[in-house]
Length: 207
Ligand SMILES: C[S@@+](CC[C@H](N)C(=O)[O-])C[C@H]1O[C@@H](n2cnc3c(N)ncnc32)[C@H](O)[C@@H]1O
Ligand SMILES: Nc1nc2[nH]cc(C(=O)O)c2c(=O)[nH]1
Ligand code: SF4
Ligand SMILES: [Mg+2]
Image (cartoon, rainbow, N blue to C red; front, top):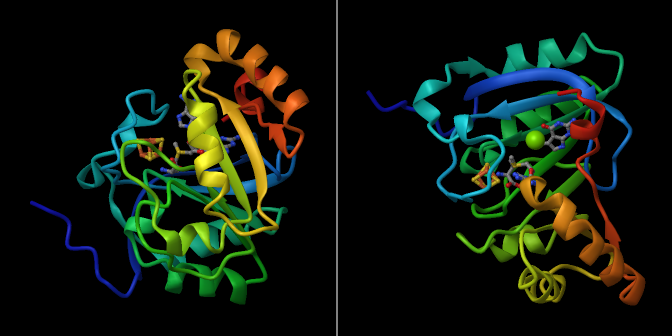
């Protein structure tokens, strides 16, 4: 039976929620409550959370309960990720998080139009399903995964589509990090508008 996810965003397929330290990008090192929504049709072959793809496997959960759980943690910041969170209407969830005094951060491929009210938007565009301009226009951070050398040209293409204040990051694909990290180091030294982002939680062995 397919999930009937209500369009008002009150019920969302929740895969997992956990309190940890943001491992990637601009907010690296800051404690945050992670909300991982199920469902993604982008199909990155190197995705590190393929268990998230099938939304049906993840129970529809009321957004009010997600907010109550988040509010119990000391850091008043959540990262909404997935799966691809923008498949869903995130207006209700993010408004309630803001009502509770919690800052809202999102990790998205941008493959679906923007919804929700955000304090930080990380756009990680994919070759497999291009991001919508509605997300590129408002992204605070562009984080391109480097799986092979062609990803530097892909990164430059997307840097032209984001706004002028958007931070630019290159992050090694995890299974290739030993090979790609030195290439990123050289690229950032030659093109210092870019910075390197590492998946520090994997080095720290935390969620
Ligand atoms: C699992 S995704 C979920 C959010 C959204 N679907 C997206 O791709 O942005 C969270 C972040 O992990 C990155 N990511 C996924 N698999 C990765 C891997 N094998 N190595 C490095 N980064 C990865 C994604 O690019 C994204 O920035
Ligand atoms: N610690 C930690 N930081 C993260 N930043 C983005 C993540 C994600 O899977 O979206 C992630 C994650 O899974 N864990
Ligand atoms: S868009 Fe994100 S969740 Fe979906 S397959 Fe790619 S990395 Fe995984
Ligand atoms: Mg992750």
